[in-house]
Amino acid sequence: MRILVTGSSGTIGTRLCERLLADGHTVIGADWEPCKWNKEIENLRINVDLRDPKQLHRCHPEPVEGRNSPFDLIIHLAANARVYELVENPERAMDNFIDTFNILEFARKNGIKKMMFASSRETYGNIHLPAGQKYSEDKAHFMTCESPYTASKIGGEALFEAYKRCYGIETIIWRFSNVYGMYDDSVRVVPLYFRQASAGETLKVFGKDKCLDFTYIDDCVNGIVLGIDKWDTAKNDTYNLAYGEGTTILHLAERMKELLKSSSPIEIGTARTGEVTHYIADISKAQKKLGYAPQTPFDRGIEKAVEWYRANT
Image 1 (spheres, rainbow, N blue to C red):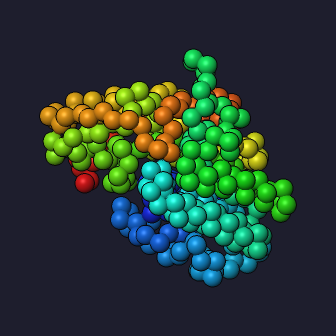
Image 2: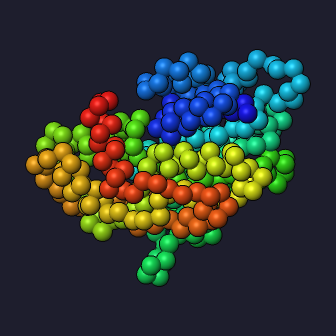
């Protein structure tokens, strides 16, 4: 297939592009940031600001005889993705709305009929489920929207649904959950704790009981690839891509200290505005329809992440 990946320089984008190339696909990336991790992925990147529809013409590859549209599939990963940063700077959530609208319009105008959207477990908000119950895909609702970031993802899902119904674009929506591992040196909690624990600095935990479902990068990418390979079975639906087990942020902090033999103190504060405080994914739909089977439990994944950070940062 010929595939356009927006956000190709990010954590998921870089690893996904590597996998797609290894699987024999033709890949073009679209990102306004260079890919600093992989020169091959950087060489495939088109420098484009998706907020400006006039720049999207740059994404057109050279025409191929017999091809009616420039791409078989668009995987839309690009987003401003730090929840609390968008609470502080809500205009960055508007960027997400604009990016998503523009890439859908690009698809509509160019006859591209398959699209994937990177949504989030934030769409579930802070609803309280009975003990032991996990979040299935039907639990998301705009009335539990906690933050501008959440709104941008719920709105993105709605736009994808509208373009499916109005313009015949087949879609898959992925709800990712705390994807971690290689190619991430951001201020997300895993790389942040690695840097802080390495330097003996205080690890701040916002919510003693905050519990989330951490997904190792390769499990996430495997899920996306399964959607491509099983498109006719998977299409026009929404899937949780996670590990299916919860880990507290406090345990993450303690585990990071243990792996790095760090003396960093842990400071426990209250949960921050806009953030989901408890989430464990029900991944049974992805398991049943796609054969999704995550392989990396949290404790092993965090070991692999630390090994990568030590070697690459």
